[in-house]
Length: 227
Image 1 (cartoon, rainbow, N blue to C red):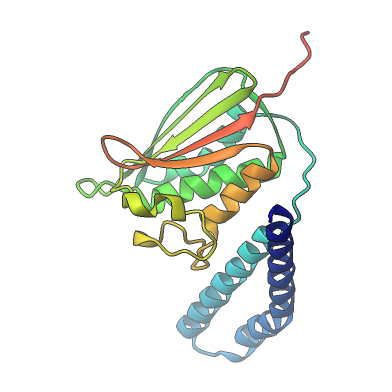
Image 2 (spheres, helix red, strand yellow; image 1 turned 180 degrees about the vertical axis):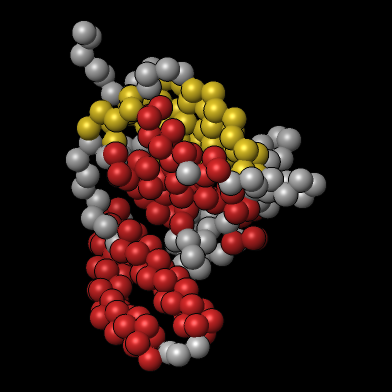
């Protein structure tokens, strides 16, 4: 049964990769034609934005279709989180509260770990805003626990209906407020869960008792040589 499911998953990934690749060429032609042939500046900008959104959707399909194997190396979780929140700190509609143990290192792919955290932060920023203030208050905490590191990202929005929590990471599932969305694909959180699993970790989504959605990630702790 497990082997059959793995085969189905592989076939779906190959199909998504093929479709995404085939869409690249006509999309590139459309982008060029828009830049050269559309005289009205506003219409040209609107069309360019639509094309950019389609390109982003294709990228999400390719992300989901990536193979399972990944080379893991020790990565500083503290530095990765700081990198991910740096550009978002400038936005007036986002406020961060960070409480992390010092010198946390995990076994990960640096680029993919940034993708995971950025995806979750953007999800919280988009759907975790307070109704009263219009600001997304995002809490980030992390601590070591035995051979793992526990990373927690929480917003203070409305959370998710309890019956939908387990479905949020199902590919193409569209929940309330489209928390699953990655530019409309319904793959955002599915990609996060799959990438965390490829790193030997685990993702769990839950509603906070006082409101908001929590993303709890368990990753392998890197054993660094003592200086």
